[in-house]
Image 1: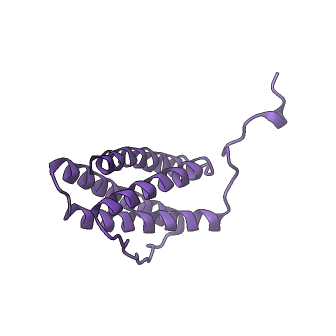
Image 2: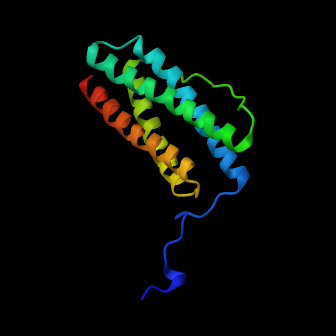
Length: 148
C-alpha cells in the first residue's frame, strides 16, 4: 500500500505562483522569437541544402512555438505580451551552430521543468510539444556542427 505522503504529486516539481508562470511564459516567448531571428541569419550562411533544410525546419518550429506561447500568455493574462529581442551575436557560421545547439539544449531543460511544474493540461502540452521539437533541433544542429 502506498503511503499518501510518499505518493507522487502533480505537478512533480511543485506548483508555480501566477507570477512565476507569467515570467516563464514571457521568457519562452522572448527565447522563441530570438531563436527564430537568429536562425534566419544562420540560413543565409548555410553551405548546402542539408544545412539549409535543418535550419529552416528549426526556424519554422520556433515561429510555431512563438505563436503557441503568445496564445498561452493571452489565454491566461488577457493581454498581448510586449517584448523585444536582442539578436544573438556570433563570430562565424560554425560558432553559430554551436551556440544554436547549446541554446536548444538549455530550452529542452527549461521546457521540461515547466512541463513538470504546471497543472493545466494546455500549458503542459504546449511545453511538451516545444520540448520535443527542441530535442530534434539539438540533434540536427549537432549533426550540422559535426559536418563542418
